[in-house]
Amino acid sequence: MANGPPLHPTPKTLHPIPPMQPQTLPLTELHPHPANSNVMPSHLLDKLIKHIDTTGQYPPIIVRKHNNAYQILDGHHRVKALQQLDRANANCTVWEANDEEALLLLATLNRLQGQDDPLKRAHLLRSLAEHHTATELTKLLPERIEQVKKLLSLDAKPPKPTVPPNLDDMPVAVHFFLLPQQKRKLSQCLKQLGGTREQALMKLVEERSR
Image (cartoon, rainbow, N blue to C red; front, top):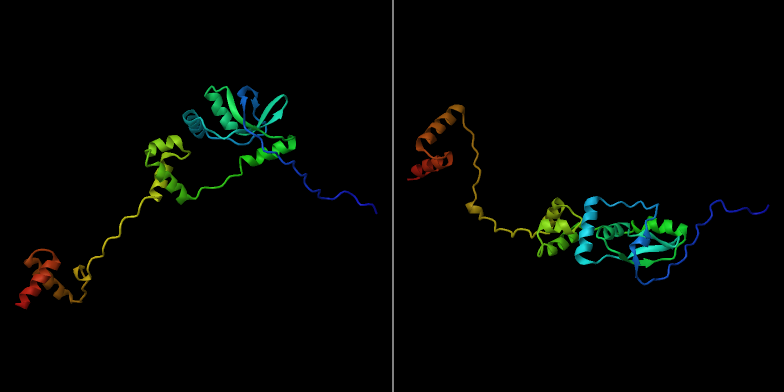
């Protein structure tokens, strides 16, 4: 019997992408990929715009040549930010990728990222807080004001331990049992002596000790 095709063909091997030097390309030649699924909330986009406007720094946009122009594989929001800042050009890296490779890169580049360790993130924000207020940090970082304050509290120095009081200076509970009529008599006596019940009881003890 002739061997037929395998029931589960192995996936195609993607071509290795050679390292490319960043280059400056006109924004008018950069077009979004129609299958891009990454969406950034408006408040984060505003912060990205402010960051680029203030520093002029951002990772290069990753693109591929497509239809006599360039198609964005990674950096759609950076391109939006540059457009809103009325910039004419963008720093880009051109990768070689066919349609299948472009889809795979589009599906992975925006998702391959680590996660912050909360304590290390808190320590990082504490270092930034030496030069910025919490309100200023919310304008520069993805976190909202509540998140910034919570992270700063995580990195706050714990209070210094206090010296425990001497056991002889701490009150001790005393328990004893009386009949109802005895309790009433004791209460009347303590009331006549004045002060708190504890003070009155000690006055009675001192009087008896003379």
